[in-house]
Amino acid sequence: MKILDCTLRDGGYANNWTFGKKEIEEIINELENSKIDIIELGFMRYETFNENRTIFQYMNQVDKLLENKKKEIIYSTMIEAFNPYPLDKLCDAKDTKVDLIRICIWKRLIHEHFDYIKKVIEKGYKITVQPSRVEQYNEDEWIYLLKLSNEIKPYAVYVVDTWGALNSEQIIKYIQLADTYLDKSIKIGYHGHNNKMQAISCAQAILSLKLEHELCFDSSLFGMGRGAGNLNTEIILQYLNERYQTKYKISNLISIIEKVILKFNKENNIWGYSLYYYLSSVYDCNPNFATYFQENKKGITLFKKFLDTLSDEEKIVCNHDFIEERLLKIKKESNESI
Image (cartoon, rainbow, N blue to C red; front, side):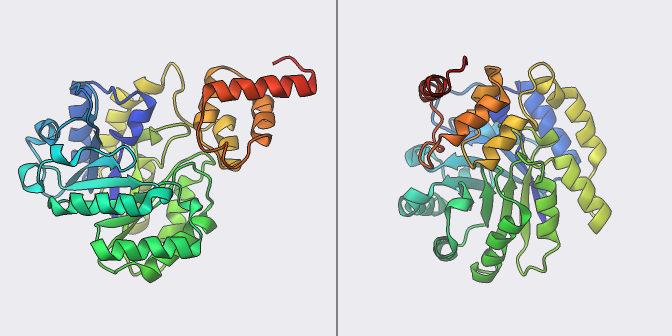
């Protein structure tokens, strides 16, 4: 069982990845002290670098955070294959302290993205396959992805509940198929969002299974992340300590949550459970719709009316002009003020 803390990467959606140089170092240090298994340091994107943010243009910028790298911990970054980091800018694995690159892929570009993944592997990196919105895959499509993964032998293949829409039974279906069809040397990952406050129950349900594969769960400090946030690192580690007698040091995490993480959420309630994010998961749509309605103080009832009008295609991409046009249409049809 491995726990990957993704605060500095997924948590960055809540604060535009602007943690502050000192705070980034403090978060890494306390995660190391907690004996976490894997620390995700941020995104690789070919854009201007700022030492206060966890968006990196080159691997040597990441390496500066790993001068006291702990050999028992795996350090990772993430690349989005649909926003591909230029491979000619990616150094060989032997020239960086980063151990692992996680690669997020889209279903409709699966073959193109697996070609990209193979080129990253050729540079010597361990990788994980992160299929966005796993609920898009029917059983045959999911098995096909697993078989493609067997050909490249990644560190892990993830069941990614991008929109926090899946319950434990739905998650387990994908996990069990992975346990059946995935090469036994490959770990099975779970990345869950907390729109329905069920990330921890899904994690516990997975742990209750008798699987042949090693597991790898993503989590973040205080659940920091986009929208409703993620599985909480402090909660899953406490559960593992109590249930499986692991030795994670939770006190280290409580102090950094109080000192650093909470200040990002104090004034604006940037992430965490809300009815808006709950409804976005019920309707299986992009949570950015919920963010727009919540930030602009448009009511819950109106949000539900809006969601009732969306086609499956319209649920995917959140466009603010589209939202306002649709609201005007709702207003005209209902003769209500919005």
